[in-house]
Length: 110
Length: 112
Image (cartoon, rainbow over all chains, first blue to last red; front, side, top):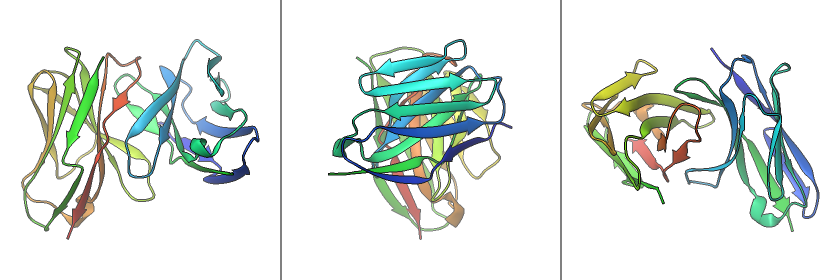
């Protein structure tokens, strides 16, 4: 069964810093890798999806990479802002399932 | 554009009572539909998914059931709630297994 791990569990950075969130998965036979944002008490907002044949995806200040052979993905956030404070979840996709990590809770300090 | 609605947003129920959570999707047809649970301190876990009306797949044995009476309606039910059913329940839709999943705002269920 796929296991997804996210490190660190929590991260605090001052505003303006660039940061990297890490995600690792045990089974490299994935359809895609997705990154989500979750605000407290809310649902998930899809940020980026990397297909298994791709190496990275970019959207604005966000860049996600995928290395299937090593079972790793990273989410890079440039020039962090207080509004980026949230929990970030990665999920690896099987045929009809998403396997989620437990998330990294990010706090950007003004 | 597509939207997904879940209700209620919060629910407090006694042990042994029944449950019905509803999820509807607008702006698309024949979506894949999913129910997830997020327990405190744990990751999201897929409970059920559906690729069409009346087609339900269960991922984990549990006290819950799901139904899809209409194309864009997905219902999560229980006849008798347990304390362990507490959690944050999320509904999602997608256009297929390799497409992004889009989530509702969730229902926070507390069992007393």
